[in-house]
Amino acid sequence: MDKTEFTVRAMRDTDLPTCLTFTQQVKWPHRMGDWQLHFSQGNGSIIEDADGEIAGCILWWDYGSEYASVGLVVVPEHRQGNGLGRTLMDTVMSQTGARNLQLVATVAGTRLYQQCGFEECGFVYQVQGELTAQPEVTNSALSFSDLDETTLKDVIALDAAAYGCSRESLLKAVAATGKGLVAFNEGKPAGFAMLRTSGHGQTLGPVLADNDDTAKALISRLLADETGFIRFDLTEEALALKPWLESLGLAQVDKVSVMVKGKFLPSSQSGVTIYSLISQAFG
Ligand SMILES: CC(C)(COP(=O)(O)OP(=O)(O)OC[C@H]1O[C@@H](n2cnc3c(N)ncnc32)[C@H](O)[C@@H]1OP(=O)(O)O)[C@@H](O)C(=O)NCCC(=O)NCCS
Image (cartoon, rainbow, N blue to C red; front, side, top):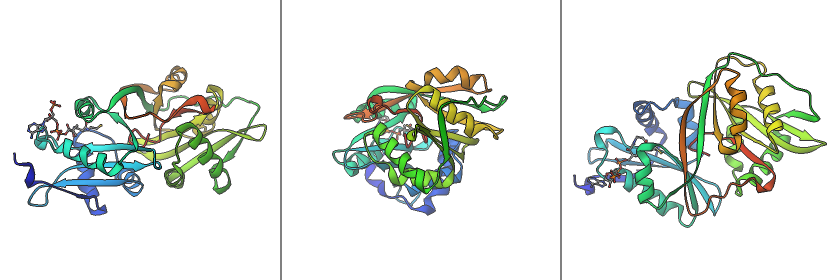
């Protein structure tokens, strides 16, 4: 196939229905609301053929001059193996400049990302299912506040400490789509969690906390009145929580690689640990 037949252009909101069919074809659970959230916060590109038919999509999210996340990379099956994925990655790598890049890779994407200079640096565990038990809400020294305009400042600061970059705009947008809770220890912010409608039901992420007990307390409180399908994208640091989540009816359904080009900025050294991602694409 002659690659000059294809052109790359900026993604438009009118492309989203086609992009949604792409993710449905690869059995990803995104609904239109998920696509709108990722599109509204990102820089999207589309590759299209000479007839204007969309042949692939990609997005990246700008977390400041040093860091970005890449995701929602899809080329429909009948177009694969012709270099379109590589063209989309090259587009993003030129747009992101000197930023360090992270992504969560499917098995299908790993070779392409390796060819683009990405290396595996960890794993994400997708844990989900119908809640069959309510988590026990234990008493602790912590106090809790709903996520609102005041506590959002604490959320943004905790997230920046853990990620090593600013995700302010993204956190504001995610906060606006659901509900959240912030934990305080002796008046000092100790963690936060957010729950929003997404995919097959609801996603509980991000969850960031100073330790496992704070993370569990936040999750317990956020799930207290919930039923139905809940998804977590857990980091390796959150594995101690997995048996507890399984006792609530959830199960691990996937384990995917985190890959990085350059330096992986998120770190627990700030004293704040990332337990659950907003989404695999956002990180
Ligand atoms: C991952 C994905 C985006 C790759 O897209 P793609 O267009 O097939 O990727 P490319 O064609 O650029 O590269 C794939 C292979 O084709 C080869 N290729 C590149 N240019 C080519 C060309 N002109 N002719 C033939 N083959 C070519 C590449 O070398 C690569 O081969 P290898 O990985 O076997 O070594 C696509 O498989 C996909 O959408 N999968 C499902 C969704 C998914 O998992 N996305 C990744 C999310 S993290």
